[in-house]
Length: 194
Ligand code: AP5
Ligand code: MG
Image 1 (cartoon, rainbow, N blue to C red):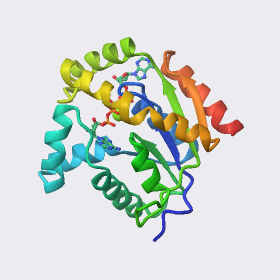
Image 2 (image 1 turned 180 degrees about the horizontal axis):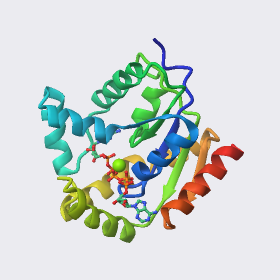
Image 3 (image 1 turned 30 degrees about the horizontal axis):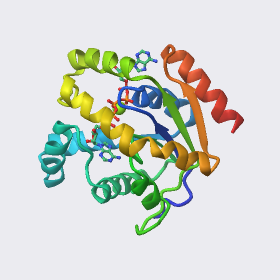
Image 4 (image 1 turned 90 degrees about the horizontal axis):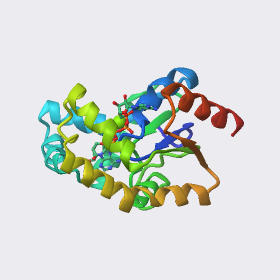
């Protein structure tokens, strides 16, 4: 089984930018498998696995999980999906290191990126959306201090990926401060043009 010939779209954006929301719409339109590393970790936590125990401590503090653990979890999920032509990668890569590993640099598997969709929102909107979601979904990392930490990680560790994919001519950028439907429409137009 190889993952090197997949058509994969990365959804890049701050916490609460709408990666999961848009992935749910895009997966039907483009017939791709949605994979959120946050969801994979939450499943591990729910099952009480050793990975879940380690991830729980980090996620509840708003810290990123180790790159290799994340990539291994992602790779195992990808190879378990035999019938898909590709993935909507939601929340991964999250560091330059992870992006390089997916390119096969110092990692035994390649998970190629066809394009990266950057959903741009500002911090005020992020805090509003996640505070609202905290009431609806009760995610343990949607508390005010953890949201702050997640935004800091995003700024320091994930934002450099914008330039990384820009340099590879793979970056598409949309304004995430619009209705869900309008953001979806903008992404579809950009993907179709690309
Ligand atoms: P993860 O689950 O990926 O969380 P996140 O990146 O912080 O993003 P969210 O899921 O909070 O937001 P989203 O962009 O999906 O927005 P959503 O669509 O839900 O990761 C959680 C943790 O796991 C990380 O902190 C880390 O510890 C670990 N982890 C995961 N991946 C990792 C990796 N690769 N490496 C290391 N560690 C990793 O929308 C948010 C809310 O806004 C919703 O209520 C939604 O209804 C609403 N909304 C969405 N769009 C709009 C809109 N256009 N208008 C109004 N409301 C909207
Ligand atoms: Mg999400």
